[in-house]
Image 1 (spheres, rainbow, N blue to C red):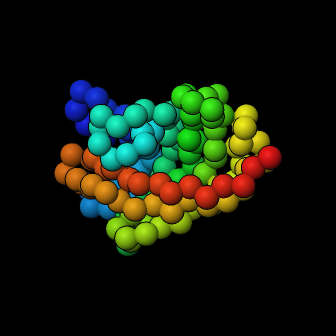
Image 2 (image 1 turned 45 degrees about the vertical axis):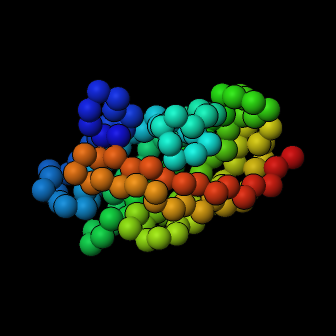
Length: 137
């Protein structure tokens, strides 16, 4: 969430000529979001989604995303999956590649499919479902 008392996303840069852009073009954000087993805020917390994203679309809401799913619970505790890719936010289903990992996900490859469960642009809040398909050693 980009606002409020439990803020987990912070805007860290923006090109001045685009500061009134409705699609946030040129904005750079840093995130440390909870990673849960389901969309409900009371579902089990299993880790964190940490990283950066840049509003890279000049004409529509498109992000360049670089993030890690850092696991803090269960058998994957201490391991992470690294994801880098294009996210066209308003598309129903998106896909981003898994480019690596650490711990039990060392040498990970695969992809994740994203679906937006809830999006409130006014307050900067979103709940996104990630279905992860990963091969690792």
